[in-house]
Length: 232
Image (tube, rainbow, N blue to C red; front, side, top):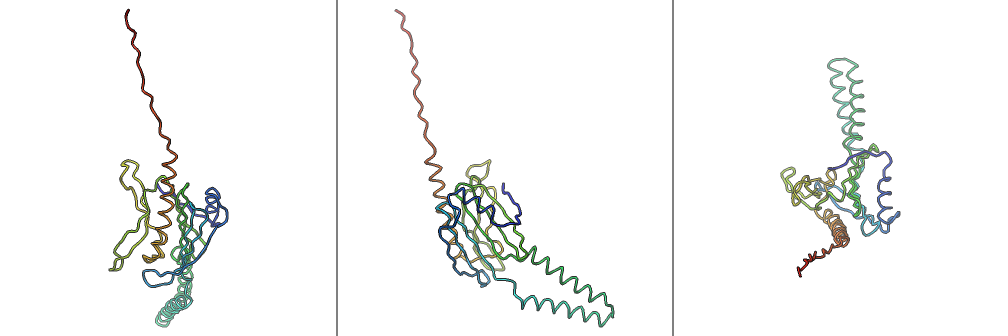
C-alpha cells in the first residue's frame, strides 16, 4: 500500500515529480518560524512549484554541542570512576568505543534534521526524513490510494497533541480506511503549523477531485428500438 525507499541524493524524486506537475523551479518560497509540542524552535519552508505541486519542509535545530559535551563527560567520568576501583585500562578504552559508537548510531538512526512533505496532485504524496548523518528515508503514496488528509489528536506524555495524518483508502470497502500514515512524527509541530500544511493539502486534493470529475465524460445510452413486422 505504501512504498518506502532510501535515497542518497536527495531531491531527485522531487525534481522529477515537479517537472511532471508543470514546473522545474519553485515559483514561490517562504519560511516561517513555529514551535514543537515541547516548545522547541522549528522552521517551516514552503515551496510552491505549481497550483498542484507544493513542498513543506520542517527543519529542526542542529545538534547542541553543549548536550553532546555533557553526555560525553558523564560517560567518561563514570568510566574513570570504574577505572579507579578496578584499575583496568580496558574500561577507558570501552568508554571511548561506546561513546563513538553511540554518537554514530544517534546521528544515523535517531537525530532527524528535517522532515519534508511533497504533494503532487497528479502523482501522490512523498514523505522524506533527513537524518543528521546525511541519510534520507523516503515514503511515497500514490494519489489514487489517498482518501483524505486530516488533523487528528492523540495522548502524548499525559497531554493532548495534534498531528497531521494521511488516510488511505480501503480497496475492499469504498468508504473504509485501510491505514493511517502520520506526518512529521519526529518534529511534532504544534497545531498552528499543522493548519498551514493542512490547508494547502486540502486545496490540492480538492483541485484533484474536481479535475478527476471533469474528466469523466458521461456515456449516453441510446434506446434500442425493436421493430416487429406486421403480417398482412
